[in-house]
Image 1 (cartoon, each protein chain N blue to C red):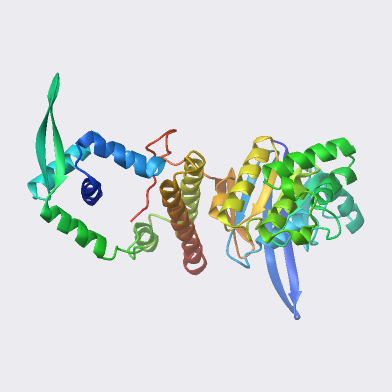
Image 2: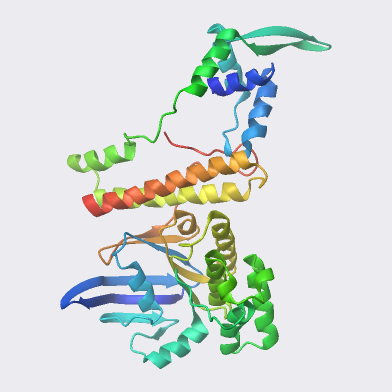
Length: 168
Length: 246
């Protein structure tokens, strides 16, 4: 979440709750609702690392609120993040480790592992179908995020089938 | 739950250039009324052969097929044709629409053949075409439609006579994601109203609508069970979680 918050602060200074709202507004139902506590913890760390700074803004009848803004170092870190390529699909896969190693120990059968995993992925896909139905059709960002997740699940299922053909 | 389809040790062996190839190898399948079953498996695992046999389009080598409590694997081709007219709807990856009839007539025809009144057939057609976003195409000949539209017409046609059993073989094979979503919605809707569905698909979006998934490998069922509710089932409303696993 560090760089997401930096990116939002690059647009304009904001306090914690505004950042939470901006995240929800941008990514809609497709993004994990950030807990305000997590946001403040992350902001604290960013501040300690010198990437952002806070100023206290006085409010009538309420405690002061902290408004955060990006430092030069923060802007550089953000530019670096935007410029570097992002990690692609994983090579290491926990399920595959299980599939290869568990039968050696005699605690699991490969066919049973694959079958259970397939049903689980289909359950995940069903959740994504529900999610896309409940997502505002105008929120293209959220729809693309969900569609991406669906394509990943489809690829996992196709690969599971390959495992079943070759290993089981 | 009464069985719409039941097979007993169903086998299909093809002769391919003198060499016998076992496509379906002893399948026992039981599908209850109102169930939606997805059939998955690699190409060559016997999925298509299985649903073709269930609809009488391919003769079994041995074993039994029961449809609505009646043994059907012993029926003649003409008896199968009658049975399909009344009880079975088919959707294939390559749709066979009647070229010299309008979309509307293509969809109404099966309903009329199975004894619906013209009014019933028209209402059913209007409902189905509307659900699939095809109302404006009703008077067009199929050839003027894009592949995705033709596939949706084929689905509407298969559902027109309100069959006991809907059989589908890769029904979303040619569809882009928006067309797929229309098909998904209609399938979900008719399933909710009690339509029994057996569908071969590799498309996980479609398969995930099913109650149950049957997995085939080398002509045999290697898994048959319900699709579970995931532990992290998203709640309604904003802030739901998509996990892009890393």
